[in-house]
Length: 391
Length: 176
Image (cartoon, rainbow over the protein chains, first blue to last red):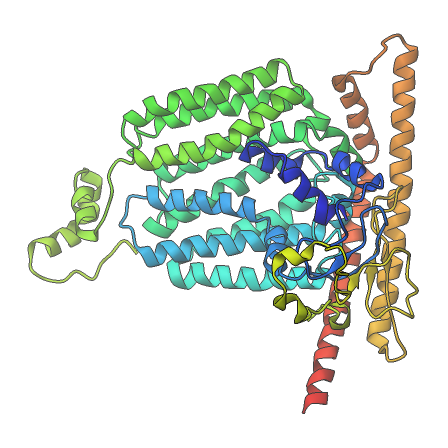
């Protein structure tokens, strides 16, 4: 079974961790065809050593649903697109950390976990909807629902439980705004983005909004409001989606076309190249604006310049000569660029708010917040406990 | 709860008593034959197997065929679910077989036309003209298919939920 053996064998030949991600996306057809040519891999004893699978040369009918012993968690991870969910959770944590309010470990944990669960639910529903389309594309034909390892009912139940748990965590453990953003994002992804993938190329813009909301959720989880600083972070993530996805989809044009997905890379390659370049330049601009809006200090603009400039350079190369090489380079770098940028955001944060009174002291710097917090400033003078907080 | 318990290979205690190195076949020491074999080489008969089976992807439609098992104790709901699933799978296979056949034929025609007009190799950029044209031509068909598939999938989901509920209630009744 290609599913059980092929990925393992390829993983042993990997050189860089980034290749691991690419394996998910690259055509597994070549690996699959090597498997089917009757080459029996070692003995029929499986990895777990507990069950025996027939050699790959014998085409097998597997029971459905079926979980290999010890692989239950791994199946749920595949269903929830664990790596993607992890990236989403990292951006949420970044949003939380960047917000100008006190860091509360409980709320932080609730926000992170809640976002992760909501994202897992969204991905599970997406996989439930797209079974016949995923079967057509090499990148996705080994998904759990496509290979029958899980029933659709199981997947949807998982999604329902995960979404309920996640949204409850966000509503009761964080605040209403974060929960609303989470629910909105879930709705946007499952009900608008997923069907739109087959209707119009506008789906990429909708999908970018879906990617930009998690840092907003983190920010709202910490500060309970969304201000211009939050929009910088969301804007960076929105802009990042374009070079990332356009580079990814470039090599998969035949597959996307046959499966019926309407992506820029297929219907309008010129637009695909231009948006990748345009938005990578926008990231440079947004990073420069971050210090102006008090999100980071001015060193940030200097530090991110080489990172963003190289990203824009790769996007320019992709624009000039769009082939599998340049698109792969751009995609791979985008996977490094985002975590690096998040790290730079964190290390250059304007000021850290460790306790609420300190935070309110700093807020009094500006006249606007002085007027806003005039009530609490009295509380800071008199030895009286103030019940007011950012929440 | 959806797993077919009888088809799950059970871990024999024998596994835990041997150290790992014995997993390789030793000469003169035949390997323990207690590991249950999972998977069948040929398409099984629905009446003889104890759970559903899924096969390798079909060459034309790329969808994996299912064998939906049933026994004499199948309830009315379970039967309607099984028939509905078989019907939807057949409809899906039919659609994608025709669709993929159209795609490859039109791709062949496009490449042939290009080669006749002079250029030897059709570049990726030129192929993307074909991909766009194919998508545009099939836009309405894809939307119709999408709506139908979502509705059918939801039907199957609700039926499956009902069947599962029925099974759980039967189990509860048997226990009490």
